Amino acid sequence: MSVELLKDKLENLKGTYVFDFHRGEDCEYLFEQYGGEEKMRQDYPQSYNAFLKASEDIVVRSGQHMEENPEACIFSGKIKRLAIENPKKAKAGTKGPGGMSRLKTGLNCYFVDGTKKVCEEGQAQPWKGISVQAKIREANSPTYLLRKNFVVEETSYYDKEIYTGVDAVSKFQNKKYHILFEVTGKDPSGKMNKICIGDEVSIGDGETFNIYNVVIEDPAPKSDVHDKNHEIVMLYGRNDQQELFKYADYREGDYYHNAFSNGKVHLLMPLKGYMTLNHGIKPNGLYKPEEGELWPRSEATYDYKQQIFTYRPDLRNDIDLYNKMKDCFSHGEYNPSIMTKVNFDLKIPDEGRSSLDWHDDIEGIQNGEPKTVMLDACFTYSIINTLGACGEEQIRIRSITKESMEEIGRKYYDYDRDSNTVYIPPITIYWGCFAKDTLIMMSDGSQKEACQIGRGDRVLGYGDRELTVENVVTGRDKTILSIRTEEDGEIRVSGGHPMMCGGEMKRAAQIKPGDWLNLSDGGLAKVEAVEMVGYDDMVYNFTFAGEEEGTYLIANGFYSGDLKMQNKKEKPKDIILTSEDLALIEEVKLLHESLV
Image (cartoon, rainbow, N blue to C red; front, side, top):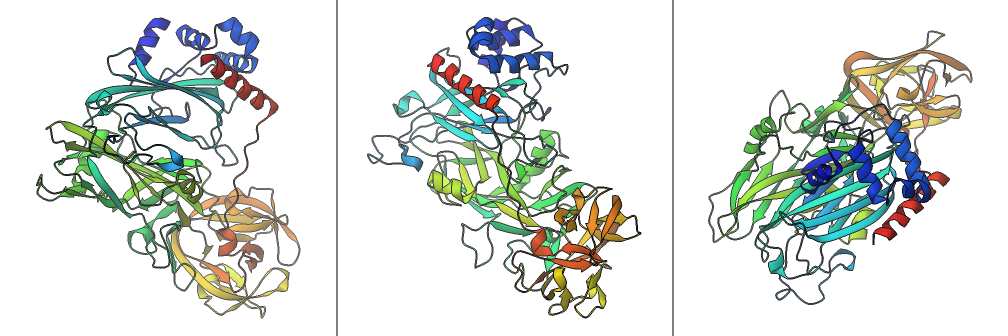
């Protein structure tokens, strides 16, 4: 394929094209952006060296879609129909988030990174020095309505919306537009990577919204003590019999059966609510994908990009997923004179599942501290407008932090018509315990099995401190981690359980043969083996009065942490930009200045 044919392909791209710098046309396309290979070599040495490293890479990636080759690229691009307001009807000076004018009459492009790869330490690996070029044009027209360039220093997390700005309503309505993102940057291995993301979007009648409102009922804070700014608390296969998690939002029913076993997570997560269609807008059911079309899948992201799980990965054929999901939507009899309410409750009751199912192999999650889940759910619903034309509306339910909500000037659970999005708080999941027969040292020198300990019992802690049991939390685990020492000692705990290891806290799943565990008599025991074993029984953990930061108790002669220590969130590591990274970023900024 020649570079001209490649350009034609990208001009009408629907999906993702991953550049492979073993192909001459891909190299030539890149050089054009830098003014030729020689100019790139002289004026952009960091970029050129990253290109050389990529061209020497023996792994060939031939333009696969990112879902088929998740480690090849870390970005996704999404197109949103920008709801149009007639400037003649809107109040002058109306401002949206960040002071942005709400008299928008064009297209909205949404770009976000979607880091999938997990490094050994469990933190997302970002691209650095990223150049992004966004283009919007009317379909079948060579003239671009918008070209925007911007620079992203690193992508531990990043999103951006691009607008066409204020213009005449008639210019945009009842037409189809094409968007293309070109993303170029240095990946974690130091190689240059370039991907293109393209799609088409249609704009209907510009003076009305098809959807009046969207209400999300689940997931949401349930307890009366939680306001809508509170994180959503979900107990993961645990049942608090006393006070500790009495305000947990999801602590009973289906959610008690969430499971972690054999290196996999099976997470039940609700997604329920309703949308209200505007007057004269007729519901037409869940959008059915065309043959070969890739549906946008909902994702649950653990710890802000540490690991991404796609909704129902067992249903790999999107037609199969559609056939199972279409009955999750219902509405009453359509009447054009009133607003139609469409209910959705995305439960697919097969194979013992009763709610959203995120079930996949995992990395970086076995360490067991509480996980922050960022839900990014979406579905596309078909409508028929007042002219009798069919259209699609993609609804998005997206978790973002409270700080991000303040930055964009919105409130949780309020429907954003401009982007068909409802923002919800992060979801926090807690788990982890002792095996039921673990011997716990009591303050009087006796020992009790974990399953025999109750509230008010007095336990011996680190430094011979007496600890009063405040709460007992129980659950059931199918597997458990067995840690054995050379002196025939053993303790069985969940993977996230904190142990005192060489005087420092280390989670059970991170312990390796050769490590040294601290014993209650002041000695050390050398770890001989660590393995996951079958269990399928009750597990237990405790909190102690006055120990807000958590503490160590004595379990089977080892110092082991309580529930509060286990569920203490660890701060994410800052991403350090090297001198080479900073030089690359300056090159990218220089490149963009030359493109203006």
